[in-house]
Amino acid sequence: MSRPVREVEAHIRPMRHEDLPHVSDIERRSYDFPWSHGVFRDCLLAGYQCIVLEVDGHVSGYGILSVAAGEAHILNLCVEPAYRSHGYGTRLLDEMLLRARTASVREIFLEVRPSNASALALYKKKGFFQVDNRPAYYQAHEGREDAAVLKKKLTVES
Image (tube, rainbow, N blue to C red; front, top):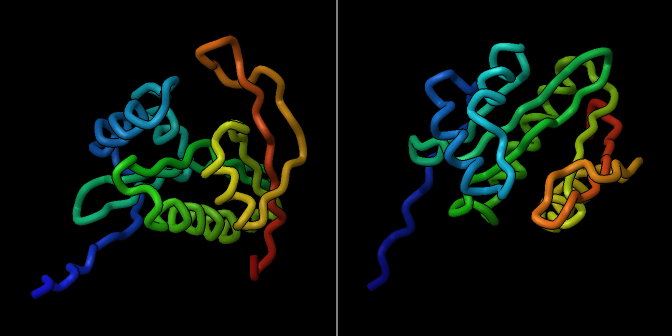
């Protein structure tokens, strides 16, 4: 007899200072060259749009969005390794796009490592396209890695 599948409770809410240890831990486990706890704290203090994804009451992902001068910039988007490939990255990205539209933003930008195939696939699926390349932007184990600069034009529908 099979057990019933339990419904997973997931929602997105604003990031709070008490979330920073969890966010920093996810960041450290996700990247070889993670943002520091202080960078996340500074984003909150600067008034960036910082959100977290909670799955069953646990912080399992986050996003950081900067909005200024009619455009937005996704500074960071990450999902806990154990929760990837379940659509949570899409949910976080959709929330950031909604927040950008609500702020009357017309364009949204981000940088991504060309080696991050899953992130690139998500962004392209959501209508982002490459507009530039930033040479030697990211720290890497062997030298530096370029950044692909992606952009999406925002309308009421997209």
